[in-house]
Amino acid sequence: MASTETTPAKDAAGVEAGLDALETTATSRPTLRQTFTGKILPPVIALAVVLVVWTLLVPTVDDPSKLPSPAAVGDAFKDAWLKGELLGYIWTSVSRGLLGFLFALVIGTPLGLLVARVRFVRAAIGPVLSGLQSLPSVAWVPPAVIWLGLNNSMMYAVILLGAVPSIANGLVSGVDQVPPLFLRAGRTMGATGVKGIWHVVLPAALPGYVAGLKQGWAFSWRSLMAAEIIASFPDLGVGLGQLLENARTASDMAMVFEAIILILFVGIAIDLLIFSPLERWVLRSRGLLVKS
Amino acid sequence: MATTTTLAEADQSVGYAARIEHVSKSFATPGGRQLVLDDITLDVAPGEFVTLLGASGCGKSTLLNLVAGLDRPTSGSIATDGRPALMFQEHALFPWLTAGKNIELALKLRGVAKSDRRDRAEELLELVRLKGAYGKRVHELSGGMRQRAALARSLAQESRLLLMDEPFSALDAITRDVLHDELTRIWEETGLSVLFVTHNVREAVRLAQRVILLSSRPGRIAREWEVGIPQPRRIEDAPVAELSLEITDVLRGEIRRHGQH
Ligand SMILES: Nc1ncnc2c1ncn2[C@@H]1O[C@H](COP(=O)(O)OP(=O)(O)OP(=O)(O)O)[C@@H](O)[C@H]1O
Ligand SMILES: [Mg+2]
Image 1 (tube, rainbow over the protein chains, first blue to last red):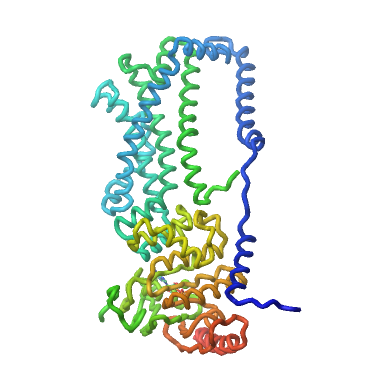
Image 2: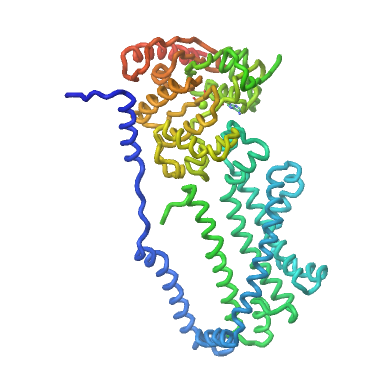
């Protein structure tokens, strides 16, 4: 076999380029059609099935005021929309929920960092903090009403008590799961102390932190709804929880359904619009999520 | 006994890249203290390429961690010429940064001005032949490319001593061959001192000026060889194979000794 004359260095470069090309594969974006059949179609079908089953169930219930038809609920939505109140209900609750969540973020983040990094603080409040996650936040409504009265600060207090533990715990578990290898690599590069926390610990803990934020939002929303239902008071403005409570007092089942559907969908929508994309972005940029 | 870890001042030149004197290390285990390293004395000269060879579990990584300052010796002293860079067996690149930003972080922590970092990172990527990889995430790189990016990040620290802990052991033979060529070229170009850990005898002979064999349990320096074969070498070269055979025989003897009691 005839061999061509190459210097070792040139040869290495050529082989290397070949190996790199072999080992990296190009990924393509999903087509519109794939997105439609994979992401949009399934929930649409599920919704259609629910509506059909619901419609079939309506005639089997003897008291029509107990189970309104989908059309009656649709009318309730239309009414609220035409009266220009629908967006108002949603905005009252969403603005409270998000503002409360931001407060929880501002408190929960440093708290989580303290618990994760300071041994004394962890021993002192770590178990309580993770235990608090399983305490239903409704339990905070009565004391909050007594301490703060029927006002917006009471709502925020309940949101905080519901969401801060989730956010702090998410950060703690994120920090706990930082691979020691990264910490050691950081130390050999001179990232110690505050630099180590900023350049290594926090970015490495981000997936756990974002999972905590996601759960924190769910808890914020739940706590807020509990507070609005239990402590509804006309001066506070009508949010979705109050809407549900008002519908119950008026025995208006269509409106009850309207309120429940709104609470469910607004909670899901915020998650889909803010937290899920955030989480996917964090995971995908680290190769922790396979593109589907 | 004194246990000191000394970093020489950056501008004052010392006669060694690393000086390891009478270093012992033991760990507390459920069955009592286990002596892992026993009285290791070893100098790495400036610009020298030394490989540390030994069976699995003989304490090679432990020794490297001590030299890197990640752990303290139980007794003895270690001095290095500045803070050494350490390249781990796993690439240890940060997955939240691109290849280029990983290198820039090392530059930043060393105090390189922001305006110079980008150019320097591109230069280093070129040095390890990863020119187009600046914006690539770690998971988008192949195993060999990751090790090269990790090498570039270690080089960014501009340490005079590079510690390498079996950096190529997870790679296939062809990629490893290529990286041996690269490492030799970079070592010759930069005048770095390298302390390279491996349990692959041929790899040790292929790369080093001096091969040091550690015995196991506890780890002691069993023997050392000067490798006089001129670079560039190939792992298949007859002189490399011949010396490897000799070293392997001694290594086998060391391991067999453990089976006898
Ligand atoms: N932190 C520790 N605590 C207790 N024992 C340890 C610790 N670190 C290492 N050892 C022990 O020290 C011995 C040497 O470990 P080390 O990782 O240095 O081996 P090695 O030579 O690098 O092996 P390999 O080639 O498999 O990487 C092992 O028996 C290990 O169990
Ligand atoms: Mg090891």
